[in-house]
Length: 276
Image (cartoon, rainbow, N blue to C red; front, side):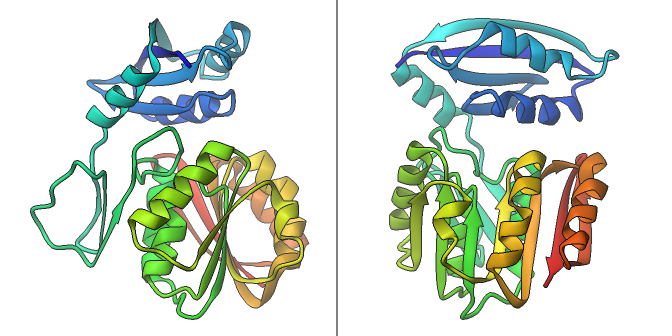
């Protein structure tokens, strides 16, 4: 399968590169990296729609100047480009997220190796970074965990590393599920079950902790199911949305009986923690 590589110039670049990446992710773009204030975005030819692409650009502020070019890539070149521009992610000395071809020069408490293919969740995005920070300080020992919208499985893997007894990782994309399974194996994880589907595939399960790093509309649609599936005194971690959308999500969660415990922001993105 061939892909298109878009090189998109934005002025100002921040925070609009992250915002545009989210919009493009919603219309089947499969991977991103930033280089010298250019956003590189990839989409398969079969999934590309010129109409949807221009509609996504129009969602940006009128004050943002946008220019772009694109070219066709063979599938093998897509993988090579993605790997060559994949940088490791570090959270203090607590966590390193690396690719198999990286060499670490320092010691970290936890190291996760992720194959940088087309699944989201390498730690580079602000929301994944914040989720990892939260997992590192959460008490997950002997907890049953749900990772909803698991992508590469990086959150599920980190949950196992910090002591979770079982993790179900759910994604609607078959290639993400397969990538999660491979990454779990590479990181010697044995307590992660990677499942293809939506929220209904875990309707008969209950969890002590739920992590959901998805877009706002899906979080709102899933909220009642999260509450039903959360054990008493359980915790719900939500991210994947802009800070400007936080109040709408808080209102929905509180209306279902959840208590807001904490709120944090990074680069215009938000993470909310609720308790049942």
